[in-house]
Length: 360
Image 1: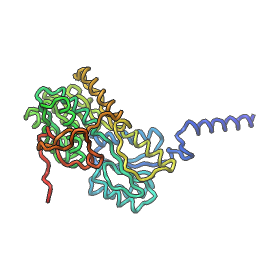
Image 2 (image 1 turned 135 degrees about the horizontal axis):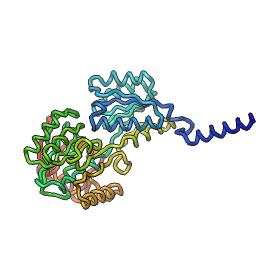
Image 3 (image 1 turned 30 degrees about the vertical axis):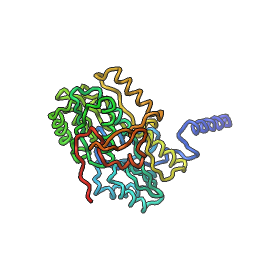
Image 4 (image 1 turned 180 degrees about the vertical axis):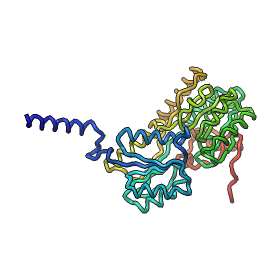
């Protein structure tokens, strides 16, 4: 009987080994991952979406921790504290954390650091982002079809290449189906400031916009649109619950897909410094479900374009299209390289708004 029990226990142990999360002999459940957030986890947008990714890791058994609403000026202290606590992976989720991430990484060479949206790497520092401009393009198509006034408002967070890229992609989507429409931009110079975002939405609607899209993190603009009987498009997460009668769709992140990828690499010892830029095909970026007001034929057209992007048959920044001043940006048959897309510093034709002047 004792021999039988020993055999039974051995069989159970083997079954658990093959059905668990063990990767090449090391279990991801042994990992500790830390997250540094620029905003509150309840912002409903950027930080909220990253925190959903963190929770995805927890479901896999990874031990996680986070600090929210970390100013750039205080980020080095927070990042260093996590490193001192022997976290295996530290995810820093704002562009402004780039240099402080590199600084701490140089002090803790055995820790893996992953910085979101930056461009600087080191032997133990990788960067990652997603091609959410593809989703922005698709939401622009929705807006182009749904507008009646041909004026669509966009609330800009900061005039940096990342946000310029997203506004351009949105505008190209709008004008691909409605060349008469224009996209008005108001800058709030903040990632998360519901008061400013709501006021900017009201200003855009006062100027004739019947749809408001955002590059900021809160749902304040969607609530403002709903209050006035207008439509809106969310950012970073599905914002339908905040303004169901106004919400057309949202450009959304699914960070859990990527965080699982990195955790498994670290667990199996195959992680190397990288510059990952995943798109809709990977599942890390997408659009949310449509609002009930979006007709079935428009949904079908958007979904068809999405499939073309996934199949590599359609490319967002492909010519011909012009710059805001009417000069040629990309000629017919040509397309921007990843490097050009990453550093884009001009608005495309159709955008009504200004960018800070460059210093000579």
